[in-house]
Length: 500
Image (tube, one colour):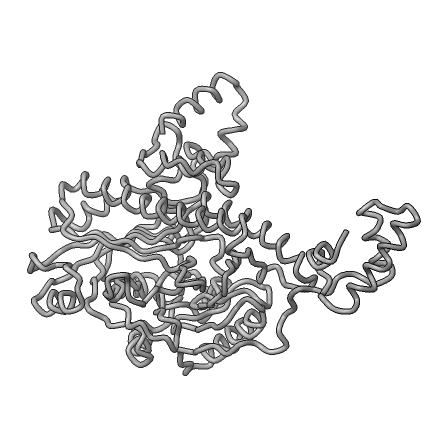
């Protein structure tokens, strides 16, 4: 055992190393040569190696692109600041920002809030992108073919909401499933989950929205001026299908594996890091594999959007005029810095120098904004991902306890649009009353120079997840598939899955 071995074990270079080597030489002379036993005796004499990292005493500064006016907004922002201040004491984090839609989430003191952004140096913090990896927006623009009601009916059969996944008799294929990624340590055994969730959107605040936009010379010129060729050959009215969802069970299991690996990695560097700050070193084998797994999940999620949109277009007999989308729960690499956004829309410039396109929904009865990023470094070049909440779902429902009052609120706020709930039960916590004022969000986007609002997609109707979770007897989870008792039936299901 030499000085390099001691330093690798965590002891700091200095006079202590010489004393330790003298002790090792004495022990070897007495016949003690077991490496494990030598370390035991060294720790008894010199103590454990000091931690490589410790939480900072004070957080690094963070930018606030948000105003709080009402009592609820001020209380909300106080909680957001407290969480950011704890999180930003993590040694690998170099900065952070808070978007106009920021709101606290999770009980832990270092949980990144919704609308939170952090810059992390050469490391990935799984808890900062959360279990809903790659939650994203995707829009397809097409010429109207029929009524909104008929299109919503077609959309209902094109997608799927709720827990679980698609039954093996109703699987949807996409080439992304054939990518050779399944030996990645973070993706092993997850292919079944990828298979059953194509054309599947989940629950919570996920939705499928149909809206309308008028393409004018002015809108086309704004895109053309910054190098985008969107809507250059079309003028007039277009419909838009916009979907909002993440990577489903595939992403949630990747997150769990990544978080476990990060906790083990960080435990070696210091004993007192909150689990929500645990990180993977980006240049380690685990970090590189996790990064590659994240990139696959990004491709898979886009494929999931595409599958829903293509099925819908086939049903209504329409063709794509334009389509694009963006992630807002993810990790993006710029140089050696990994930007983590928990509900934040990237707003920098792409490799061609063009402002990134973004879709920002505000609530089911308000337009979805089409924006171009303003690449504002004061806020790490991000924009909000929506309108955010000032109250949790539970707190909102406690505030409006009366069933009649809830029904009145729902009817009032959805009176001009066709809203479908996947389980047939309206959910007050997903109506406009649950979210911040959309006009205030738009004002703050402009005031803090986060993005340029180019156009708005006006709402016509939507299918919302929301409501109480329902389990359909025909929808099987991967665990249920594996637990089917009859071996022949299990083998047949595996063969069906194998075709995809």
